[in-house]
Length: 130
Image 1 (tube, one colour):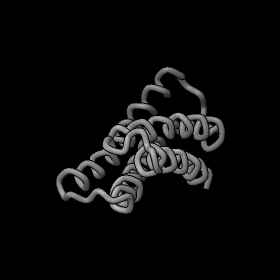
Image 2: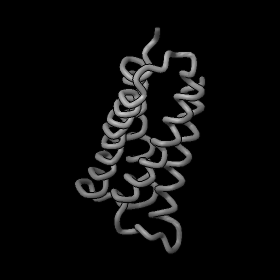
Image 3: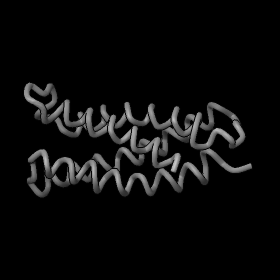
């Protein structure tokens, strides 16, 4: 539940940021959805780290902080790459460029696969049990 709650907040940051950068009137990155996905994803990664470290897995031992942060961000970059790749395939291979298509490819399919990857990875390597 805690992981899901933190993920939901990070998801709102990612989806809201992406749509603000690409799909709202006057959006600054309207023609650069992949760049917008990376920027909004990076912000959501920071939200997720603080939420997971200080709430989801606060009872887990705090090991080497630089190792934990490095692993967390490296694994999240892989998760971000999954979402960005699904968006790029949808946009540039399949030719889907609507707001709905962007959100389904990046923020449903990409985030879904990335979340499964991150949950397993955090538990296994970042916030290890005692």
